[in-house]
Image 1 (tube, rainbow, N blue to C red):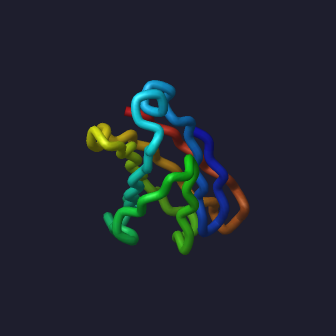
Image 2: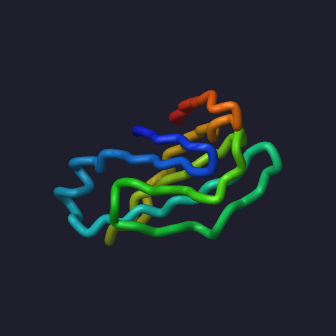
Image 3: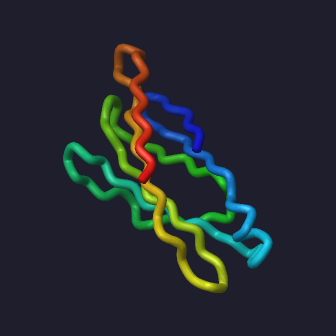
Length: 100
C-alpha cells in the first residue's frame, strides 16, 4: 500500500491480488474509515473499482484507520487495515503503517 498525506486528506493506493483478477475480473473495493482519537466514523462505506481512494475533509494532525475489502461475485474478502496520520499544521508529516 502507498500513501500521500496532506493536512486534510489522505490518498491510499494498493495493488490488486492477481488471484482475484484471474478468477473474477469484476472486482470492486469497499473502503471504510474512522478518525481514531474521537472515534468518529466518517462517511458510510465507499465502493470503488479503482485501486486508490482519497479521504477528504479530515482533521489536521488526526489519526485515521482505514479498512479495505475486495468484493467479487464470490463475496467479500477479509478487510485489510491501514492507519495514517494527517499532517500537523506545522507542516510536519507523521505516517504510521499497520497491516494486519
